View 1: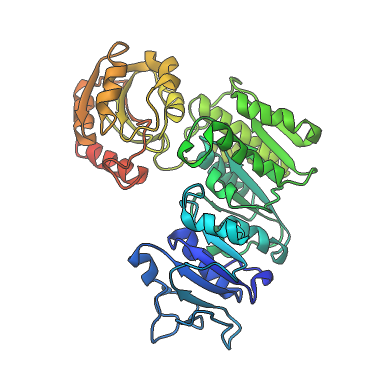
View 2: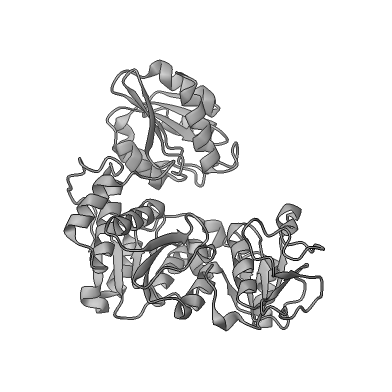
Length: 458
């Protein structure tokens, strides 16, 4: 577990007790902080609820000498660890910070407004990690953001470093919460995927290498227009020391503008231009033009960290990709079935369509916008489309003049219809360009349902 000496004796309010919030509570208490925690979900609160047995409810392997109590102002336990109290956060006076999960909307949640009025900093688990860095063995941090491609690029950088024998962990918006993991030895590299929400909650993370892949409209319900969303991404570089490296994709105007604003970095600024021709034939998990850009960004990162060309080549070749991101899950009768459930907006679906010659496209869910304009350049690759979910009727109407389209409603029906129509050499592609929440818990559940439907064909 990663902890900071600076937390000892301080008081923190923690709102949201899912993965990152729970990890923050555990780390803060282990570091000697006083914590009052709350979540609207009873099941999440129950993990930290008071118990006659100290430490009960923390889960196997968690420290049993963490005292749990109901005192409104807990103090340090005799063992030197902090205390946690589960109680509504009505009054923030006396707290050193409010720690919130990235899912808490800072623009609308009343507690965030209360914290601002009270002058209490609102932070997240990544800021807590930044505060702990001084107490960790010497290391480096890579921070990767962008609307699309963050997870693949983060995993790729992590994989290349591992291939090169460099101690590394990945966290942030991917994998285990970073505070939950054991600190790296000297010379290690922490690779963090950072959403705009996480950057909003971070003030002091000085990345040795900061990466911006792209910026396209997304999450606009949380920001004052697209400009506010782009400004959030920009803050990753504002927190950097001038001598640290920046890698920026300049395929869109907002990202290119950010790169121009960092021109003073000189040799510490790498720009990734779109449309660079690369031989991707030896990289089975990195197909398509978008993955060429992800690979170029990852290469720039690891070169800045001193990784050799030989290790970079080995890492690119052996990278197996991530679930639900252009992942081929089966091939029946010469037809490939590809799970790209993570593509939750048209901008992330467009390169997936372009990566295959003959596509049976499963599209739909809860739309994030009213059009599919970003996908239009790749419409020529689509043999037939199968619309599902809330957006199904709307998208079927949009697509009907460009390709054959069926409004089939459900994912299972889409798979069965696509399988009936596909010919050898075709690809059945789930790349929905939508969120999943109309029919599924999340994009992972949607991907699992796709796999189950495909496997039922056998």
